[in-house]
Length: 266
Image (cartoon, rainbow, N blue to C red; front, side, top):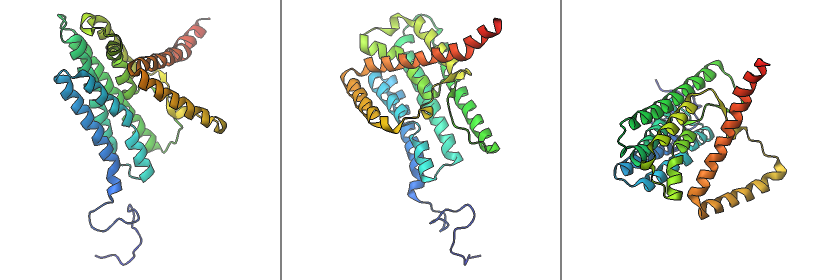
């Protein structure tokens, strides 16, 4: 039966309700997610062809646009369960599968030890579990109606885990080190990164940063300086940034894990 009232009905937005169509802008977040997914898949294709540098650039591109789809969805009011699931599956491929395969082909495939693949499996499985835990926690928060400000992440998030896993690759690009000659440290590093992703360690979240208004100019100047340094020595700066992030992990470990245990023993 046709509806005489021209106002939007329950669950409809202004401008919707005419047939089964929806505004094109509502598709933009999922399009961004699909773009990242294509980047991750293409990175795997370049890994299989031995073009490791191009593969790294595509993974870095997927890291860069991660979260952009969610931001766009919130700004446009286009968030959906479908988009959330698509984003999670895309993250698993981009930050679990693609980096693991890249590190395996560069560092572990030529090793006589067959155990290298096991560490890749551990890393990818930990990334998958990290994303699953995040989805469950997010769903519980939505069901309970909680609106809690995010002060930190629980465990290393998937994009940061991918960058940590690629640290040996960045060092190789900067120094010319042949990773295939040192498979054991790479294997242990992958296992450590996987453990950090599924851990309960509070880790740094950019959402917790608050900038005083009078210092916004300094932040912009620092950003320009950072971009200049990245252009001058890209791989070296990436290694430095990742090492600084590792320092935040060590600080969190001593503050939230080690210090309370030492306090109880006294």
